[in-house]
Length: 306
Image (tube, rainbow, N blue to C red):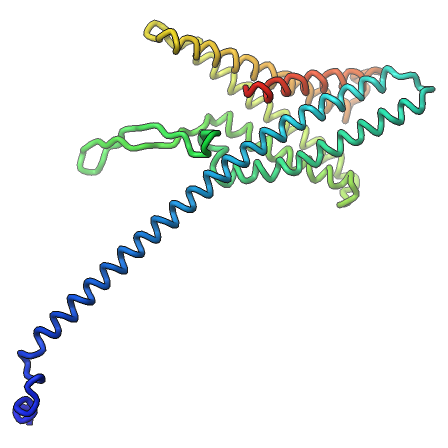
């Protein structure tokens, strides 16, 4: 029967299938390779798009954070000056006191709103890795350095690696985010958006403590950098490198001064909140002076770009 079918239909002979099968296999193999190439190309393009989006987010959020810091410093300066002016105004000048109180309240609301937006900006930096690795502010790319790794076969290979921030710097940034986030909740309570009751004062104290911890971490990080720079040898440095080293030292010293002033200011504010008797009858004046110093120093640092 098989013989008769093959004799009637020559294309069904076993040898006749070989060219057809070979052609089909070649086409399947070629299509598979094309699909693999397309998948690889699409995956590479998707990764490139994700990287570009991450870089863009980091760049824009860092710019937004810097702008909000400058705005907060300006509002803090005006608010602190208003607080000092209120303490120096005669109690009988009700009209002047009301105007100063309105200005102080407006500055407080504006600072609270900018702090809420800053929480979002810092949150994006946290989730995109900008809080953990050094970032180029101009492009949003991670700063890379080369390091040598040893492979399994014993050979060594030079690969690019992200520059990790110091533990103190990371701790300072994360505690600053936590402080601003808790402060935003307290601000929402002040606007009657949520009701915290007696917990509002406790949360406010926690936010101030976290802010103080952040300032302490940043101050310690600046001190470590200063000691490292001072102890580093300078014999082989060129004139340009020496000039850059001096500029870095000036920046670090000023940043250390700002963080120390912030730390003392947070301590004074905590004393006013929980033990106002320690500051005496001039408590508001003392707090206003420290707030003004902190705002002015931070304004100079943020404006100059330290």
